Image (cartoon, rainbow, N blue to C red; front, top):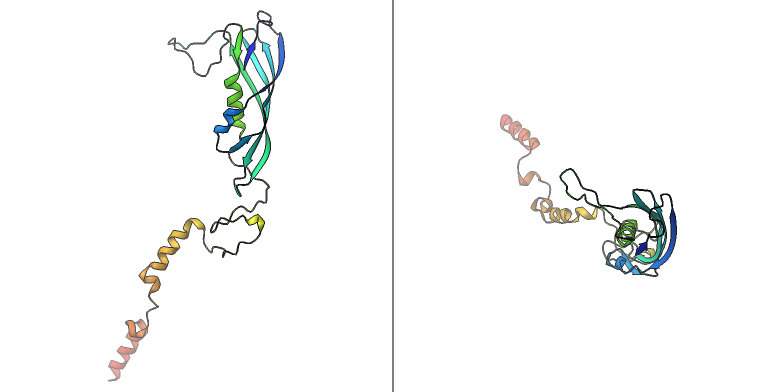
Length: 200
């Protein structure tokens, strides 16, 4: 999205507003987004601050996400605000190296494409749920628990510890019964044996 700033150049404090609809195809690259349901609505204000041009505004777009618990699709609107300064001239450090992450005016225009892209990408939630009480999926069979009980027994241990419980089941010690008198001597047997020896 390129904005022509010739009308406010050389006029500190001057500004203009712009409202546009832009394609949001770049959002499809995110795994969290299933579909982009409409164009990006951009409402921006560009102000000449004297040394730079300040771009502020709001962005919104309708998208389809997937619940992070049950994986069902849900529609929502991504909304975000942006604020970025576009320099009239690039800035360099003491070693005359170009400072990173600069936005610079190009002639009579400034390109707000990267600003819009970065702002919306950051606004996408890492985890989204269709409802706060969404029960998610059964860890055993994968059935949606929102549709009812799947019949799987509830695990007695944390699912992350399930491999350890299987190892315990296969352990020889787990299969060996508790030691009895005929499997070895106990303290009780030792004392009895000593007693019997004294009596004899």
